[in-house]
Image 1 (cartoon, one colour):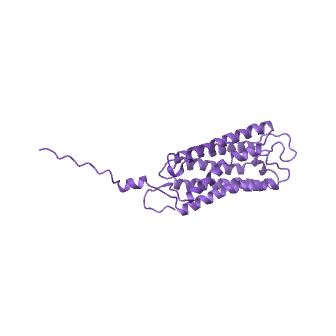
Image 2: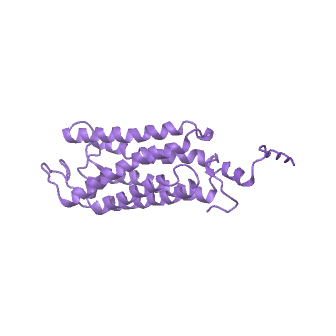
Image 3: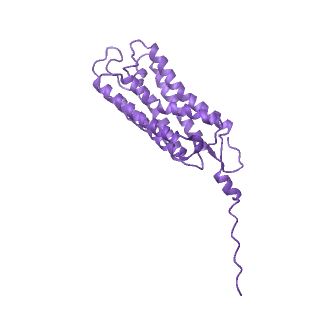
Length: 248
């Protein structure tokens, strides 16, 4: 008795599950608002230290590092600024965990940002050592255990900033809605290292504008985050749709 050949499956109509897996949707408004609040918190960080630096007698933002604002009278403001920025970055890590779930970078990008946020909080609790020229009159400096901890977490934070940009670049690969964002993310990460290297050289040789280079290095990911809000608020599809459950 011969067996009847099985009819080939109709591949022209995807299953409901397959359609959901392949679909991307704009970020829901409530989740986008949470992301915007987090980005606003990171933008408040440079605004705060720029105002504090302008108001601090004897402080030269072209020459001095951001961390030296945590020294002397009023130093509590910059220490609190580090902590609040760290909280904002951890908040962003939690929001991105929801936005990226089910797609590339859903695990590692939030983890990298969370480490960055924790590092910023630790920087706020462990102040830097005095630097030549600040507080005013400082000529020679020495390393304390608090300053060493501060430096270690500063290095960690800068590396996490760059690494996060490299990791998230994969999310935009071959996404027609975000053409150019892979390159933008990678270049931003490289600029973090370039500017930080320039800061180190300028600071060690006491020449140039080390304060400017540090500010450029530590704001590349902030600018990246603010720029990402533009296409997201324009409702370009970004999130993977994994079912009818409402995303909050």
